[in-house]
Amino acid sequence: GNGSTSNQLNNHCGLALNENSSTLYIADTNNHRIMSYASGAIAGTVVAGGNGAGTLNNQLYNPMAVYFDSASNSLVIANTGAHAIVRWVIGAAGWTLVAGYPGFSGSSPTMLNNPACVIFDSLGNMYVADTSNHRIQFFSAGQRNGTTIAGVTGVPGNAANLLNNPRSIALDNRNGTTIAGVTGVPGNAANLLNNPRSIALDNQFNLYVADTSNNRIQIFS
Image 1 (cartoon, rainbow, N blue to C red):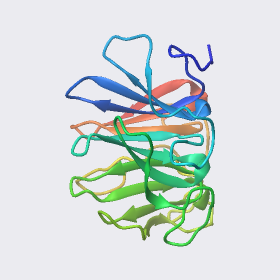
Image 2: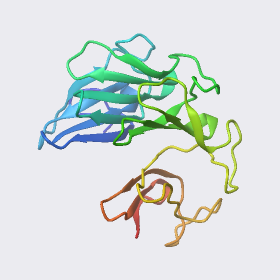
Image 3: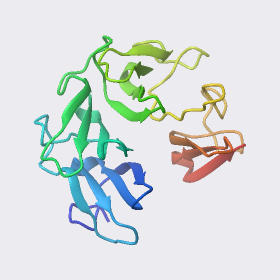
Image 4: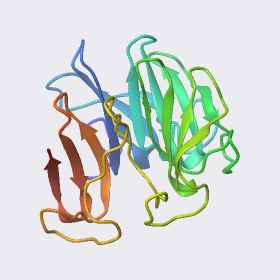
């Protein structure tokens, strides 16, 4: 069940894997921490946060996604409730700011509003699902100014150029964006989704979708 001991989680969201060590990192959202699990372990270790909800640099606030950066042995965290993306080096006592302004939401190129996903491409560029701004933001490597590459800031919708609370991103190196389902129509038929929360692509470019309210994982080839 839900809890805050080392073998419990509370509304866990994002996952990241260190493939070299088979260590699994989990965004334990409502416990305001990132947990680390060795392969086969049933209890985890707090590696980021765990000091209550807040915006101090040793705290997290409802983190919803985590990305493992093998080059720097660090975790890049969508610190959703604090409206920021932060980097926490494994073993460090606190984070450094990557994007956004902790504790303040906004829609300018340097601000975020409840970011729920963060990923990187092979060049170190960062992509953020800026959920409550209804957009996907692109940050060139090392930069704090974002560029909107999908959606229209502050405008939710189901038209082809709009997004509505985007929560996940997957990079398709062939042609950019893949969308499955029928716009604005929830359902449980094979071609429909209901409240999808996360997506992933495999090396054959099959799309996996966490079809949350249908309690299933859908695969689209």
